[in-house]
Length: 551
Image 1 (cartoon, helix red, strand yellow):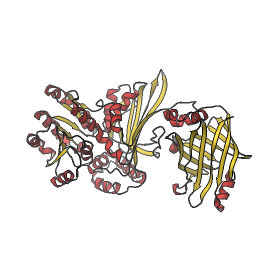
Image 2: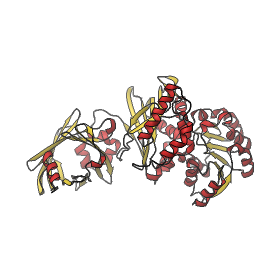
Image 3: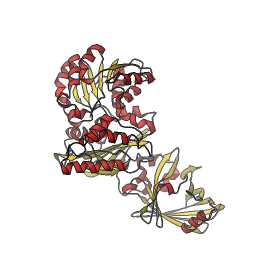
Image 4: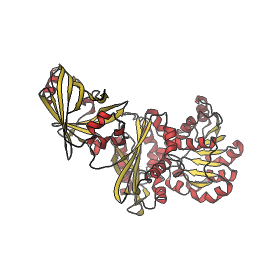
């Protein structure tokens, strides 16, 4: 199979070529205006697929189709928002030449208008699919899965790329171009508009049982979903989609510029796109992780419900997700499975199972959450990951009743002056090789109090589910100190990973945050704990481990 990729050495086209590298029956024509860049990409390419560099401007696509005679054209060039009056030139050339067509278009108007070619494509027996990327292919797959158990009324979503993912200049031109401009969407049951990058919300991407992303600031972006999703689900009254690029300081500067443009009716900010492109691709710090979420509200059995889907991508795997939708379609073509003829968006092109197959073997994880009331603390935070815990952990954390467990523990204490002072203030136990321990769990409306008794020496803390920036985290309070921790289920253990902390309600610097490996597990049917609390510049404050059984 011969595939012509316009923009084949760019961000999305290049990653698509890499994803297809294991298919020996493919000839990939890496096309673009700069032959030297195409040749450089092909020289560095490693894989079973054959790559061929070609200089080809999209305006000369007709000549390119005649010369190369591909079976499929993939337009990865963009920005699709800037194509003007001849925006569908490549589509028309493909229909005339009898060639199937896919694109990465993120322009809402471009994708929503592709169905004008539906009759011609069906008559020619060709498929023309537009917007074959995370928005709207993955969004559509998620919402169809959600619709199996609820009637959807409103949808919010967002994508948060890793700061190390890099962003293409054409993408930056598109984003900066609509900053402060009207963005078509549905709100309050009416087709209206919002203001690009001037509307924001915060959300925590938290796949059940995985280390969540930090709470992220998302801003409204102009993506095809805003117009396409209400078409597929007419009962939806509200839809909003955002992006959460980091660093947040640069993101907030864009917010301010977008609001200024809208308020003062300033011209497009597109001339500044190269500046933002250069800065954003140089300010790379923080966690090399990205994610995506979809939150839906609606009705189930006549009752209001809220459900959310979360995706987490670690390291270098995340940046490939936008290209995986086309990868999936190409793999199906190779296997003899063609999309139905016609011209349409990709909102119905793939299922969540298709994506799960692509994510398999990669550090990409996804899961659903339901906002349930009146459930115990830990099951409410962990979601369905709670069911993967060992039985002893489920028994201890799965109850909403007052209870007391007993056992023995080994205690270690730091010997430095500051460590001893900190331990004394909290009331941590003294060093002991073996000491009897009891823990009383007292549930309340806003969480659960844990009162620990180490051989007569008692200290207590209050645990609750975090809100706001601590959403989906366990917040443990020791007097004026609060520690927000992620609950991570891995290899039969439940890890408590510190993420944020505060003193007297004031957020404290992360570089001073207490640290240590703390986890719960099951050994010989008993609930076991291993807690390590250390601080920068102080070292170990206290460590204790042991086992508990129901009293």
